[in-house]
Length: 471
Image (cartoon, rainbow, N blue to C red; front, side, top):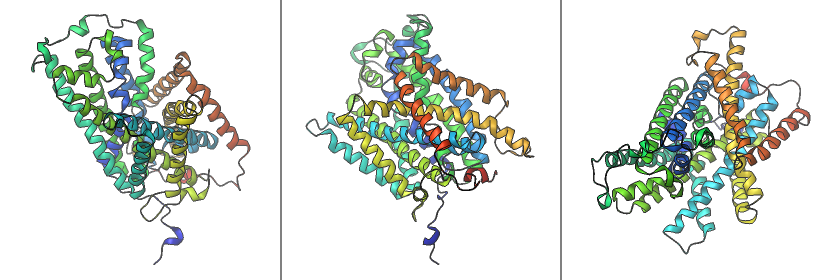
């Protein structure tokens, strides 16, 4: 029988737990870890940098616990946008969805441009735009094949990054404690770099500055929720993926920072292109710079791959909520929302073009939106969990029937909400991040009031997330 009349209007549940885990890692482990850790150590000091990542990891843990309860109860593609629509309000969900979508679309352009820049090391005479087209084309193919093909590609992208981090921790830690010899007969630093200064050499201000960047470096873990609508057996795979992501991300980040801080003096850490390369060089690993260049290239493409997926599914979710054209909610026979993918890719290409012709204006605004969209998404997750539990109990639901429960309700979700709000407010005190508020807040408000006052709604039909069965 021909099924083209209702052309497989739903996404296919083809992703396994390992795909969800690696997708979330793919959105997290990028230049924030491989490149920017030197600046974090320089500003906060060795011990302060570790403290900063532990606090950032704690905020991530709280947010992911909120995500776990919501996604297991309602495994829908679009995640926090759908939950905000149902439990906070449709205008809020509309604004959050479009801000998050635009942020990831711009991130695809940013990561592709950065990846193209890395290729200059091996092909110095090749134009940047050629590599941009190559990478954009590759990302399109990976996302257009099927959700399972995307998940498989992301699994291997992220695996390379994870392997590199494990090798770095093992080899760097061995050199730090003198188990392997360092280049030039240098003595093993042991804990000398930690003991050479106090906990916070630049005071509490240095810690607060780094906290903002560190918190953003953990963002991407929420992609588990975005992919929930395409996961097999969500009540089992989602909790398992969240636990793996939280603890392994903390493990990788904190141990890697410990090794970098132990091997590189904090006073000079910010002048290093990549602390990971510097550590490999100090051990005497041949072709360290080329190896790390390849790893960072993989990391950038992985983030872009996850970003294109997340943005596409967000547009799909908005369409299913009747918040944009129904055409953007159609999926092909492979279960891919192709129209949503093409729209996202078009905006990514326009963002990429603006980096060449309007880098100081349009491109800067778009990139500023990228970080803010994820932060507002985390705020929405915390607020939605609080509202969901109240809604669930009020309508006769029993808490013991929930297959995944955020512990210590309402204290942990409330703490998550407060801490995430503080992170966003702190952006106003950082000159480099302030533009995100200048661009993002007006965009959010414009979307909110547009939906509230301008969008015509027929009858009283509620968004589909409202009618989503709680399992």
